[in-house]
Each structure stands twice: as structure tokens, then as C-alpha cells.
Image 1 (tube, rainbow, N blue to C red):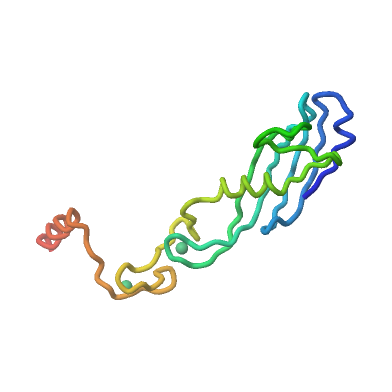
Image 2: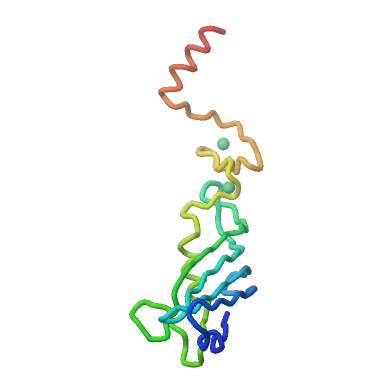
Length: 153
Ligand SMILES: [Zn+2]
Ligand SMILES: [Zn+2]
């Protein structure tokens, strides 16, 4: 995703441009990007939505989910360690910033749904799809309660 910014760079500090973006960086993304001219270059703010394919951390199924990726980064006219730069052709390339922020935003333990039932700890069946006959291990603290309930019955 490359945007030519030569015109904006000729404008005064504070000048703004907005773009709708729609692209592919190994994953599809779309959204809005705004560019503001600063004294050192451009402040680039993005709000993008991407669809990622991942594996549920609970039931291990494959699923696609939408991830909101937002960023504010300055792109500099002069090369600086660790900074995003405006190329000599006066273009900015959004692929690296998009990729980095997507990795940062990606959840560590993705869930296919917030109440995913997961896999049975004994037979390994996906409890979202089937119920199994395994006797669930009872937490020892709950076992005390369970026996109290049983006495009442
Ligand atoms: Zn799941
Ligand atoms: Zn089971």
C-alpha cells in the first residue's frame, strides 16, 4: 500500500489528507488513513479492519475473525534509526506499519467465540460440536459442596 505524498509535503504544517485504503498485506485490510504535515514529515493515523485466520486457543478449530488495527506513526523525511521514512520518491509505504500493528493487536489467546466450550480434557472431543459422556473431574473445593447437596437429596 503506497501513497504518493509529494503534494502534501509542499503544503504548510497542519495540512491534512484522508484516504480510503483497501489492500492486501498477506491478509486483507481496509479502512481509513489520514496524513498530517508536520515539521519533520507526516503524522500518519490509520484505522483499519483486517480479517485474520487463526486457531482457537481453546478448541483448536480454524476460524476467521475481524481485527481492528489502529496506529499513529510519524513518517520522517530524513532517515532515522527505527523510524518510518518517506521515500526519496516522496511516497510512504504502509505495509510495514500495518504489519507491525496487526501483530501487536493480535490477541495472544484467540477464541472462536467468547463462550467457546473447548475440548474435553479427557476424550478430546470438541464440546462445541458434541457432548461427551466423560465424568467431569470436580474441583476438590466444589466436591465438598457437591456432597452436601447430595446429602440433602
Ligand atoms: Zn473455540
Ligand atoms: Zn469427553
